[in-house]
Length: 376
Image 1 (spheres, one colour):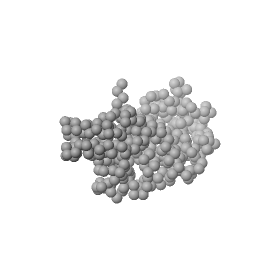
Image 2 (cartoon, helix red, strand yellow):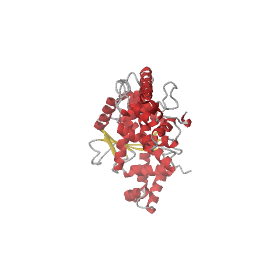
Image 3 (cartoon, rainbow, N blue to C red):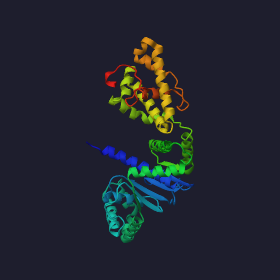
Image 4 (cartoon, rainbow, N blue to C red):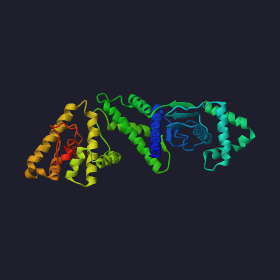
């Protein structure tokens, strides 16, 4: 099986997480972070970024997997092609298997660039050769020394993707979750929300074929936004964004036809779009539930008990039609759940009712839209 596509997607995920980690660890007034600018991550000063002239800062190459000597030569070429920077860094998933800071390495990179004159004009070796060919011709030893100086000052950081996640959680919570005292899960949710906004911004920039640029004031607006949305006393969500993000997960769940919720929903309405929509509602309810289920276990239990009572009342109210899954579903999900904890609106209400049809729900509160031998 060809996994090259998955490997590429993993690389993009690694880059995004690394970008966010650099933001969290280095954010400050007048600093500006760029994703896929002059390098994978570019940390510079806001008043210089737009002209790109005499722009010093940090250029960071982010690489998952294992880096070959050839790939390292390309990385150095990218730095030589970029405007001069104070610092050059490597964020790696795996340590380099060769000595990178030596005169011998500098000479190999020189040979790589020299050989670039034989390659296509679009290749990075050719571009570097064309930029430095006069220097290489006039004083090759001086150029090799320039390369050696560059690579000798490169800072390397080796982190797995789990390592990045761990540090992100620690740094973000220390700096931006001190107001959350009661709900540890809310801290993780706040970080998750922050990451989703960063990723959304990156996606929008990619659509416009532009680098994603995050200045300090935009960063602080995001922090203020997520702090307002998720706290000890409040948990709000961008429903449209969540639905868009969850649609593929919901489609996969529906296509597998394994969960009891899916089987029960198909008894109500056999249109796939309806089932997907209701599974998305359930995912939203589960997301809300996960924040409070430990510290507010009693409140969660009470609201789900009330939902079960609404179901029983609906069965009684429609009488003989209680055997009609569609009729029972409509009559049940129209009934409000008495709880100050659950957000208002039909999304979470319907999500709760769908959740209660699941296999893992306790039998005394589990609900059933209709008879389906496979769903029992």
